[in-house]
Length: 505
Image 1: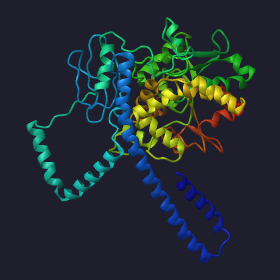
Image 2: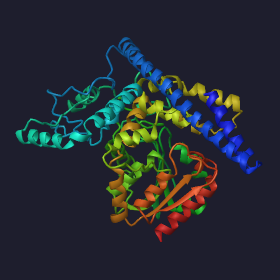
Image 3: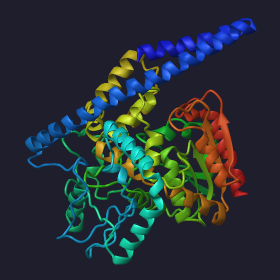
């Protein structure tokens, strides 16, 4: 890694030196820079291959380690997605999890449990070595049969006519185990596991008779002139809004609008059921049950960040006549090439299995390695109070600790399933949501993106604008995925007030 960084630094230095050189020397220097750049890329790819090949093995080892620990501590085996996707339900109903790349449920018992999105990325994450080997073999096969395509087509057509080709229905064993309890009317693991934090803050939802989201509400007690729903991003919490924007809204805004900031299901102080698959429907239902219904919200503005943008779009499409404005910060909308499975494409865009930049390395571990990410949650999330204390001690309270709270206060089960079922699983649905916003919604659409955002590229915001031409895109210089709000809360609060005023007029 350090060698790669040295090469990168040398390249930047040479770029500066080029300005001071004659043309002949500049040509030589240009070739040198090209060689160094190529060398850096090759080195980066080689290091990435070695690191992620090791992580593939480590994840397998941790799989057995966690199974043993789960059995010893909780006296039962806990399901994981390492099992092959070949087990079917025969006693509790028919569940179709994957058919030719699409995921859905086709039949259930009378309990009518409805799950519409179970991303195939949960159980089809090939190792790096296996993926490279498979792509190499496929390329060799393609070259070998390139001249025989017509014959293959005829044979395939004959097989279809004879009825010899059948679609393959596959069910992942983990999904089977997690759903069987729900279908039977039981909750397998409603309370957090031993590897999750059991402090009062993280488990406060267990003492409530109603399993609703934690909602921070401010503004007039009765119905104001408008309501605003704030939806945070991945591994975050309502504090992302309440500690930044809420104190900076004008008195007029606070007396006019009811402000609702929520902790999403599985995050912050909201419920973290261990038997949930955290699908899009689960998240939307909880938002409706926790905010829209109890507070009798009929028309509202939505402000959403990162992953929250997906939920905001889905909610807007579900309530087309109620949404007055959509404000999206760093929406994760990746264009999917034709013929490519959307879920897998998005996963590789979000987590490309590269060691640099570090944020990409972290996203790759969180997305590709179920057991390594659980081990990280065990170290960080279960001990979040210790990390908060050490951070305050070292920085002398100079760092915003609410960000650490949002980053640490979740369970692995919630983060793992939300990442795959929402960010990856909606890859094929976002285009339809945006089409609906463009054609059927009249609400104002505004998009903000930090120019230095290394989590979600700025192109994603322009992709949204391409689908919804009326959307306004504002790229903020010198800001990234988090500082787009945290470093400019006063300015952003004023911008939001202008948006709401314009949309309500």
